[in-house]
Length: 154
Image (cartoon, rainbow, N blue to C red; front, top):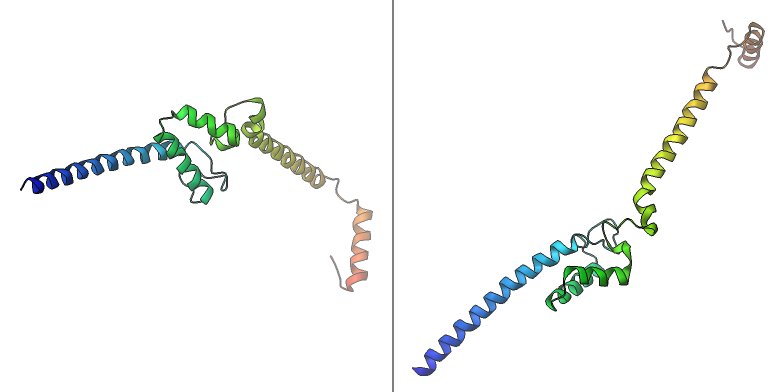
């Protein structure tokens, strides 16, 4: 009877321990998911680490999980990742001299595209507004077309 009671208590304590560990794992999983949303997948490059299914992304998430289990803060983990992979790993890189092109490059390309489009349209407009043909040039063009096609042109 004593052993039965001891076995039941042991089983209950193990179930409470696993339930507590599962709740800690759920909290840890959520913390890893939230943290990995601010990181870029190094393979996919246009996806967050949380959304990526690449093998490297899985490995990075596992490393983050292990560091969080070890008690490291988010800032420490972020410093480790940026030291290892550079600012590129950050989904929103800080504005520094090295990252200015990342921040302003799309706007520069857009402005350049508008300039090219404006010059193209202006050039086409200048071509359209050329002086009309003189009467002599018109008659010459009509004669050339007649001789080529053999038809009467008005």
